[in-house]
Image 1 (cartoon, rainbow, N blue to C red):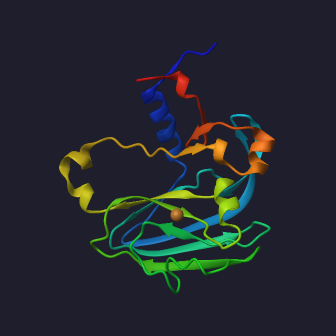
Image 2: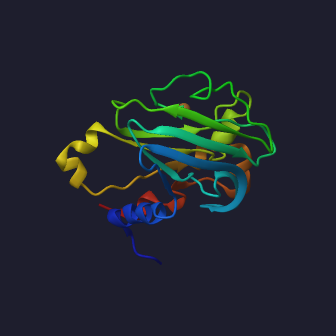
Length: 201
Ligand SMILES: [Cu+2]
C-alpha cells in the first residue's frame, strides 16, 4: 500500500506537468497553436479516449500578458466541428475574437486574432469549445485548457515573489456517458488521478 500524498506533492504534480505544457507569448505577441484531437489516455477507472489539445488533457497552459496581440491557430483533427470560447476574457464576441458562432469543420483550421487591452485584468481564465450542438460533449470529454493573463496583480511584489501552481480539477462523475462507461468515474488534477483520502495537509 502506498503512503498518503502530502498536499505539496499534489502541487508538485501540477508543477511537473507545466514544464512541457506551457505556451507563452513573447515580446507582446502570442502566436500559439492548438490542435484538437482524440487521444487515448488513462483515467482513474482505466484507459479511455479523451479529446485533447496538443495531445494533452487539460490542454497546454496558455500564458500571455495584458496588452498582447493574440494569434491563436486552432486546427481541428476531430471528426466533428469545433471552435473556441475564451471564458472570462474582456474581448469582442464578434469577428475573429471570442466568437462562438465561428465553426472549424473537421480537417479545418482558423486563427483567432485579438488584442488584449493594456489594462486587461490579470487572472486565470478558461479556453474551451463552444460550438452549438457539440459543446457539452466536447467539454465533458475534457477538451479545454487554462489561459493565464499576467498584468496588474503580478506587479504586487508579494504576488510576484510567491510560488505558483496551476491546478485543473476534473470530476469524471460529471463527464460524458461515453467516457464514464469506458473508464469509470474519478477525480483528476492536471490529468493525474487524485484520491482526496490520500491528502495530508
Ligand atoms: Cu465557458
